[in-house]
Length: 235
Image (cartoon, rainbow, N blue to C red; front, side, top):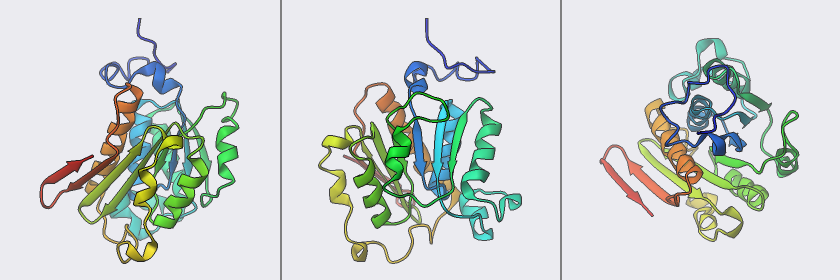
């Protein structure tokens, strides 16, 4: 018999169980660092697939400029992004347990993530890196590499998406090569040119790598999608 996650709606995942193994999902602790354009969509999709526990990390407040590209609601303006996103996730999945961390990610958070979650047993995190600078990515990687079971990084520049995935972070020697110096990065925040449809596609690609990992399928370590050119490459 297929094991399912305890739920007030036990049939909510019936059409996805062959693709998203319930028992393996139930043992996961997804951590979304950054709930802007991509991260908000990642969190919503994780809630929808039935993640039982979710941690959201972001220090930012919703502004008017976030309404179109990040799909926040007008009523969210002035709220912490983690709180506004958590509200939607709970509406989608009332059984989800969400830890809101309205702070900028710091190296010391690694200990917090490993200490367990509101009475839950400690679980090594599956990390979704959705920040907008290379320096922040590097800090997250260095802090969580020894502990994470999976790290998926979503990057976006206008209509170009890049998703990097590492299913063995502690032994990974590729991801660090993508953490180039800031002066080599795109001039400006990667969220300066963004749309909700690009962010949603990026989040879907990230969840796709996550579910591959749940099923024991090797992840694609580096995927680039150019929506304007209609091109996709994977390594």
